Length: 123
Picture 1 (tube, rainbow, N blue to C red):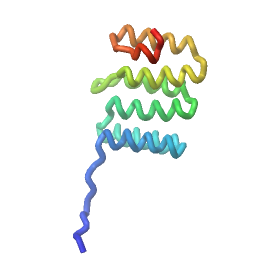
Picture 2: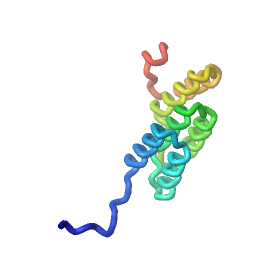
Picture 3: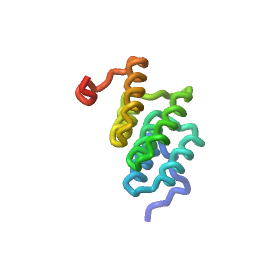
Picture 4: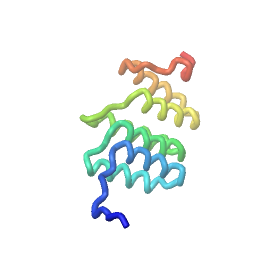
């Protein structure tokens, strides 16, 4: 028999993001939030991890929590929102018909000089 290792390799930021996305399919917001917090405690917060938790919130109709998380991301010194981040937000806001919030998000995209997906937004 092979020798068992007494340790496990630490999870990467990408693995945390994937785990958070899996929590979405399990409809477990608590697990997603727990994984997000664990990644933060290990100094692994990256935009992809924020995007993953934002997706969980959007998938579960929690657009305001998604917007709150975006504000937290904007305050991070090590990472920042990308066009993917805003796409997630706008998707959720659109499903909830929060047009004024969508327009605000589109304005932020323009202010940040992010390249929007022209076809997606029909600009």
